[in-house]
Image (tube, rainbow, N blue to C red; front, side, top):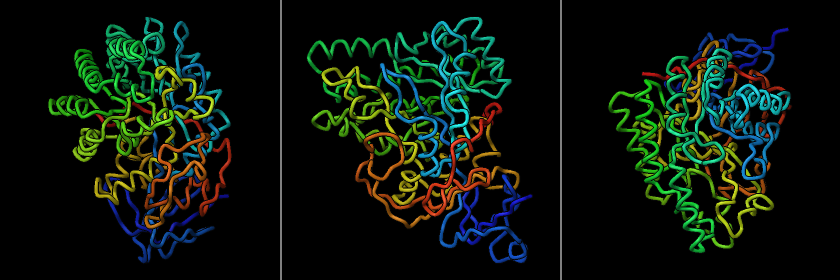
Length: 467
C-alpha cells in the first residue's frame, strides 16, 4: 500500500529558491511541488496532511563530518551511532557521513567493515562513510579504487597527529595521484603536526599545562602552511582537495588564492569556529577542556574571515566535526597536561539552529543556509539530488522548521550523549518541529518518533561539485 503525505502552506527553501508551496510525498520520495492555493495543490489527496503554515519547509541537513564511537587518546567518542543519529535528527539533520578508520598495518576493508558493524541497525537517519587512510602502501592504493566503485568516494588524510593518523608528503601525494585517477576526493586535516609536537613539548617543559595552551601551540600559521602545502601537492597530482575544519584567517586566504587560480580546492568550517573562540579555551578551573578540538578555536577576530568566506564561496560547507567526549572522566584525562585532553566537541544537534541564527543575525541568507548545510555537502560527496534538496525524485528528507520559536541551548535539554553543551545558555531563534526521513516521521511535533535501524547505509557517487 502506497502512503501519501502532503505538507501544506509552508515556505519551501532550497539552495536556489524560496516559494510558498505544498509538497507531495509518496512513500519514501517527493513526487511533486505546487504553489499553495493553486488548483493543482488543492486537488491532491493524501493519507495525512502536515500543516506548515508560518513555517519553513527545508531539506534535511547533510552533516558531512561526524565521528561516532571514534577511538581517540585512550577513550572513545561518547555518542554511539544510535544516540548520535537520534540527536542529529532532533537538530534537523537527516544524513551524516562518518569516518571509518584504517589502522596502521591493516587494510581499508577491515576498517570499513568495523564501522559498518558499529552502525548497522543502529541509525535513526541515513548514513555514509568516508575512509581515513592511515597507512598508504600499494595495497591501500588498490583498495581505494575498489572503495570508490562501492560508493565510498572520499578519503581523509592527516598532516597532524604523528604516530597516529599522520601521513607524510610522499604518502599524501601518492593517495592524491590515485584519487586523480579513480575520481575520489581527498579530505585533508591541514596542520603541521611535526612542528606542533615540538611546540607542545616546549610548552609542557615550561609548565604551560592548561587547556588554553592547546590553542597557543596549534598556531594559525601552521594551519595555513599545511593548507598551502596540501594545495600544492593536490596541484602536482592533478587532484581535487577538500580541507576540513578550516579555522584561521590565513588558511581561508590560501583557499581563496587557490580558487582564484581555478583549482578544484574546497573548504569546510564548523559552527565552533564561527561562534566560539579562545576565550572559551581560557575558561578557568579546567572548564576550557570542554572546548579542546583540532584545529583549535581561534581568537574572535578570525570569525569575520570565516563568515566572509562562506558568503564568497571560498568556504562551501559547514559540518560539525561532531566528536564528543564527556567532561567528567574523558576530558579530565588531560588535567595537568593539555596534550592528553581528547580532541573534539559535540555539535551534531546544534548546527542547523546555529546557522539559522546566522541568518537572523545577517551573516548569511536563508538560501545560503540551505546551500552550506544541505545542498553543497550533498553535491560535494555524491548524494545530490537524492539528498540536500526538495524536488521531485528526491528522498523525502524534509524538515518543518519554526523560524520564530526561541530556545536556550543546554546540556539539560539536548539529546547528544555528552555531559555538557559547547553552547550552554546560548539563546537562538528557530527550532525544528517535525522531521521526515525518507517519508517516515523521526521527529513529530517536537517528539522523537523514529527508531534505531530506520537509517540506511547510502553509497555515494563521486564529487558533483568540481569545476
